[in-house]
Amino acid sequence: MIACLFTCILWLMIIDTHSHLQFDAYDADRDEVVKRTIAEDIQTINVGTSFETSKKGIEFANTYGDHFFAAIGLHPTDVDEPFDAQQYRELATSKKVVAIGEIGLDYFKKPTDAQKEKQKQIFIQQLDLAKELNLPVILHCRMAHDEVIEILASRNIDRGVVHCFTGTLDQAEKYVNLGFYLGINGIIFKFNIDTVIQNISLEKLVLETDCPYLTPPMAESKRNEPIFMKYTIQKISELKNISTVKVAETTTKNAKQLFGV
Image (cartoon, rainbow, N blue to C red; front, top):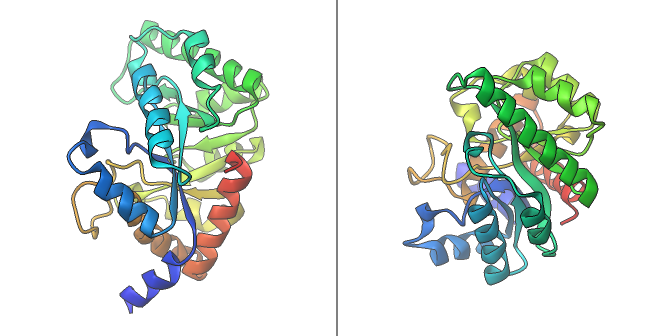
């Protein structure tokens, strides 16, 4: 039954809105991972966390073709790296670039007040760049949702996705009211956001993996990859009591609308 279920899902084109196939974790077998991804007709947005990985994401997308896109940005835990808006502006001239990200705030490791302020400054600079370039944003947020929501509202940012959402239902509703989608991935097998998934409209959810991280526990390998989105689709369908095909179709439509892919 499970095999049949996944066959029904995977004849549809699906979009992994947050992957890192350009990362070193795939250096040994990247071509094989790409072949599996294309064989299941999965498109991916490969997200940068620094200037170098943003550049590599574009190079990856150019190398492997129409199924692959890129997002460019400086991750909040990497803000010791200088942020040069002009460098990212030049990267964004590539037609493969569909978003600015992943950007945001990360207070998980208890940064100092000075480190928090630096994260905020660079986050705001990247939000301004996204607005200038008319690109959606991919948000990274850990233990700082209220501050992120406040910043987004104050700068009138209303296009993007909250990557790997693990906040409360109230926070989810605030993001949705601002115009944002919620990114759902394998973390739902470790962190309970069932209430959020059940109460937020499917029209405001998109699929992602964050591969090579956050592998669903039932996946065939410890390293995550786009083909394992099928387990996330199954979990969402169970929580919302709808078909897996409906989940795949609607989240793909949502991703196309947001990123223009």
